[in-house]
Length: 229
Image (cartoon, rainbow, N blue to C red; front, side, top):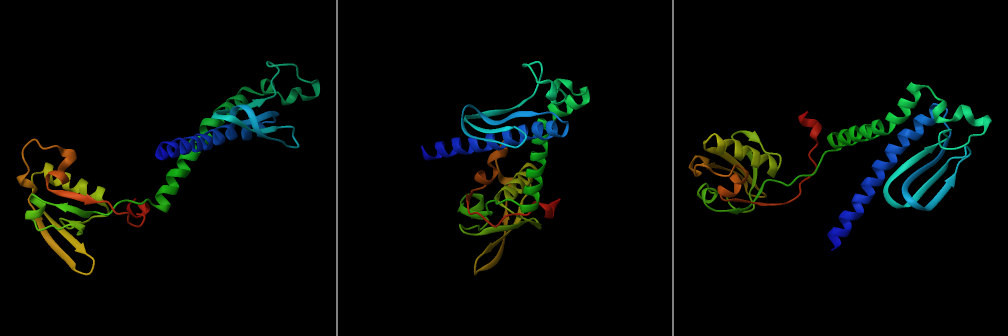
């Protein structure tokens, strides 16, 4: 139950961030084009919080966090005082209106690009390629629980997903591989894992398991993806 509530909470937070950036795109460009913004709302329904700035714009956080909107001055939606008609959305040029409408999706695109950039710069955590179970072909190769796979056929292994990919590639080529493992305080050992002995028609998604390797999922320090770009 706690996991479900946590998932719902983070979904609401994520949606709120996306909506805020989207609506801010409309808001920012509208202001730059001289359009009067009447309300900037994150969420629908009854306002939970409201503030009005010196331009007369209401900033609102509403009760239903499933979207948002920016309401602009527009003669098609009601009477506009003659002194403010030049600030109405419908009075702007076609290109200005296009820019205002397109600004929301563009803001979301820029947010996605910024998040991807942050992921590549900051890095991500992954599980180490630590053996938790060794039987079958893995046991025959001398692999033992607690050993960490650090190299396969001379190629460094950065994580369990990297190891799984290299194992799958070798199994599809029906070739045996050299596996270098490390154990804290015990140095390195090299093993020969005979993947050529896997049965024909094996499930490519289960190569490690079919070879007798069960992973011990232990988080390792973040892998900085920019090193590999």
